[in-house]
Amino acid sequence: MDRLPRHIAIIMDGNGRWAQEQGQDRLYGHFHGVESVREIVEGCAELGIRYLTLYAFSTENWDRPEPEVTGLMELLVETIRKEVPTLNKNNIRLHVIGDMSMLPENAHRALQEALDMTATNSGLNLVMALSYSSRWELVHAVKRIAEDVQASKVDPAEIGQDILQSYLATSAFPDPELMIRTSGEYRISNFLLYQLAYAELYFTSTRWPEFRKNHLYEAILDYQGRERRFGKTGHQVREDSGVKW
Image (tube, rainbow, N blue to C red):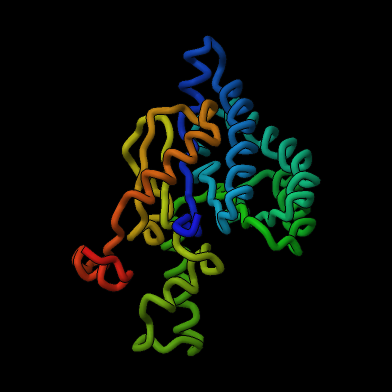
């Protein structure tokens, strides 16, 4: 328990394929994926994980068939309004990263209400990546930096990693130590490209609607079996941690 990742990020993949394997339409998979979200949020809260980021909807997902996008937005609004009491009961604070301006008004309103209603909670920080892509985030950050340089608020000579990070959508959160992707795909798919620089990546063939606490525990155990070196040698890492050979 003293070697848990502080921040876990998850690409929740496989809802549509799982539904098709059940002979159902894709929205059926998204509906059942909500139960996995509940299960994993609960599991992280029970373990004392401080941050959980879920990749719920990318900027590229707007190009999916209109009925699926519309259904997803309706499911989003319904789920958020239904889950806020549970979030408050479990002291979970909701955050959102992404281009909120692209969301339908009712979804935007429901999200803002949920953000306001959970703002004082101090337990797990649940970060939903909605209408998000890392390239969008980086371009947006660079534009804001350029504006502040032009306004003489930022000295170009002082721009480094710390300043860049302060302009990212995730500036209030630590970088993830563990990234999980479900459904057997081995890609990061434009998700937290800057923040995942030193994360441990874990891929599972389990479809998201079937992903449960035991799968989360397996991913964490795998993470705990790895040696995180950050450019150092294994000997240096063991020496720094006091491990004797």
